[in-house]
Amino acid sequence: DAGVTQSPTHLIKTRGQHVTLRCSPISGHKSVSWYQQVLGQGPQFIFQYYEKEERGRGNFPDRFSARQFPNYSSELNVNALLLGDSALYLCASSLGAEQYFGPGTRLTVT
Amino acid sequence: AQSVTQPDIHITVSEGASLELRCNYSYGATPYLFWYVQSPGQGLQLLLKYFSGDTLVQGIKGFEAEFKRSQSSFNLRKPSVHWSDAAEYFCAVGGSNDYKLSFGAGTTVTVRA
Image 1: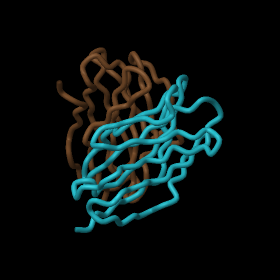
Image 2 (image 1 turned 90 degrees about the horizontal axis):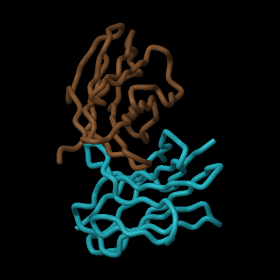
Image 3 (image 1 turned 90 degrees about the vertical axis):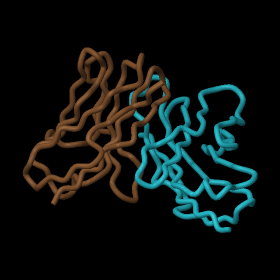
């Protein structure tokens, strides 16, 4: 079975630009979560979506937004990029309490 | 508030030696506890989890962890380390009605020949 997939793998953007990251969950999983992992730190929770509704939001500014589609895939959008947004963005899908992570998207903001 | 502390930033072990990684958590209700492993540039792989029941849980790759409620700990162990175990290890806490995981800062494991 395919695991969680994320695209793109790597991305380089300039300050002030906008970025969209994509995630496809494991088949049958209805919940998708997004995490930000800055180099040298543990992942920090950004959002969780369940059945296309936002279920929870972490302590991130409004520049961060997300949505979930009818096929349960998800997009994370970040506006007005800052240098500090450079990180590995991880998507996780879940059926219950266990979360399974994708390989991540490495975002570099210059 | 929920939080996880991993006291050891970096551990070096010899191949074949035993390994123990420490994890302390703070959680207001019954915790769900997880250990994940991350190889350089990769995502997180779930090693094992604890929800309830037997406090000693077995995971993949020969790892086990013990939940000690009185110490708010969930330490990870492996009896004999292989070179391929070199990676970063993260402990995380969540709950049955929780939508997020809170992670520790991670412990980097180096395996020397």
